[in-house]
Image (tube, rainbow, N blue to C red):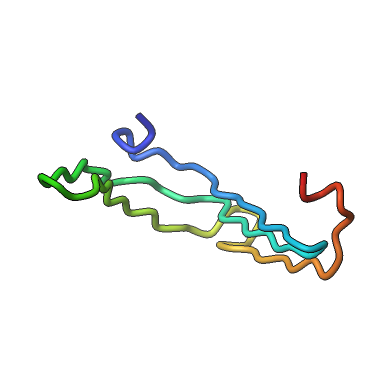
Length: 75
């Protein structure tokens, strides 16, 4: 539904392994053009555009590298 409405969303994800990690933050992303692409005997794909814009906090994308994370962070 968010794709059909060209909604503004946030995209955040964290990767962690062996007590290290990194996080990515895209605070203002517009979703659009999500059209189902079905071809016989091939994987179903969903092409999606997700342009980012500058957020009022002043950043468009943020990356943080964690050189050490406690083991509990990987659960």
